[in-house]
Image (cartoon, rainbow, N blue to C red; front, top):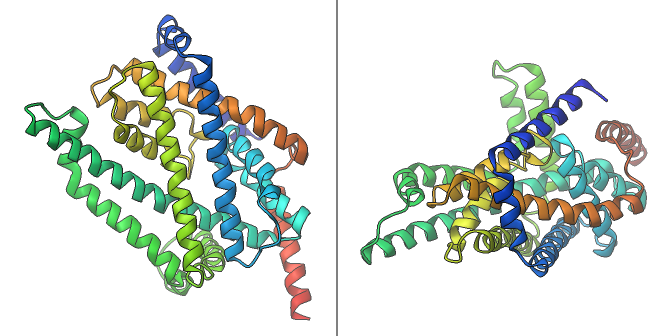
Length: 356
């Protein structure tokens, strides 16, 4: 095992240990035991549907690239397996499973598969911004309605109102930037980017990203209906994530917990999965989710219990379904670097054949 992977895993376990020590074990198990088993089964099924929708979104994006002969059922196992591996490995290494499955089972070039995944990540960020901004406006509107009835703003509402101008700018810059990436060929900026005094390694990485993303994005503007459908499905995924967190909140702590707060906290937590610092964003997800719930006048221990139970149900679901899918695909030994190295060689050969 490489030193970087070893350090990452050790840090992950250290973060989990801190959480365990922070929460009183008696209080944690008391909260868990008061929840009916049917509730856990329902939320696990809800999360399984969440992963199913991710496969639907993947299928839509493949169809945009003209790949229409795979079938949704053939994408389910790679998606569940990939989701499990992304949960336990750093840098979204589970995505390599999807690249491998497309190549092995459908002879789809690795570069095409990778461009689809990059487009998927951009749409993920775009829809997180949309859903998050909608939840933000609902939180503020709820606070204004409460004040008009003689109540006070919560700490979270006060902070969001104070930061509203800055948040609007961030959301506008983010959404406009993503729309620009999708509808304009950003690859034209590669020569300009290389003129700046930036380390060559960084410019090369940026050029690789723009080239790969550009290949996937050029078909998006030609298929607006499919693009809109992918955005709707992706937004539905985040609403389900927020619904799960809300259900855990009302079951564990308070029956009057507002859905829009759970949705906003879930969106902020899910942003960490795009570029996770630790495997499965362990720690960063819980801290962000717990912080937003705490600001809604909950005790910090209660908020962290909600985040950990949410994580626990998702992990257990993926261990069962993702573990089974991984065994079916026999992909436990796949390494992202080996697959991408093979992709470069394989794509060069295919391009040479096409030229000849």
